[in-house]
Image (cartoon, rainbow, N blue to C red; front, side, top):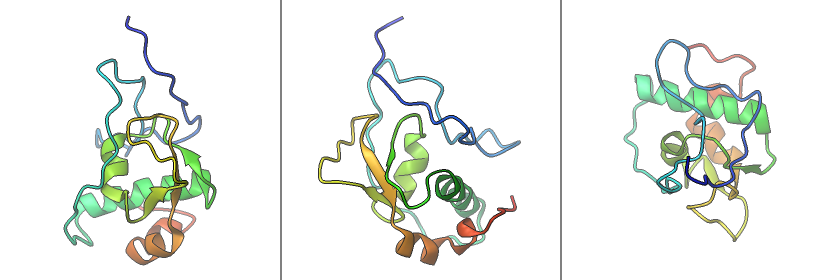
Length: 125
């Protein structure tokens, strides 16, 4: 197997949405290179399934990391990209979209406005 980049695995973080096939984490580093983090536009869609998935992912991020900065690690780029630049932001000026070690944080003010349900103790799917 190719030499894979080092990637922190966030132990205890949910792997995805139960019974959906939607993943929140990846198992191993991408042998073809790190999937870049980039802000992806999202349509207003409260109540839609995709909005619920984003809310569930944010719920997992908040209840795992809280307000503290966290390493990208094995968090799924597709899920992060839908929140990036809004609810999830770079934690410092050294943001590297091609690094598993780049540091992120939740912009709590924006996140609470977009996904208030993500801050409850329980998130109903």
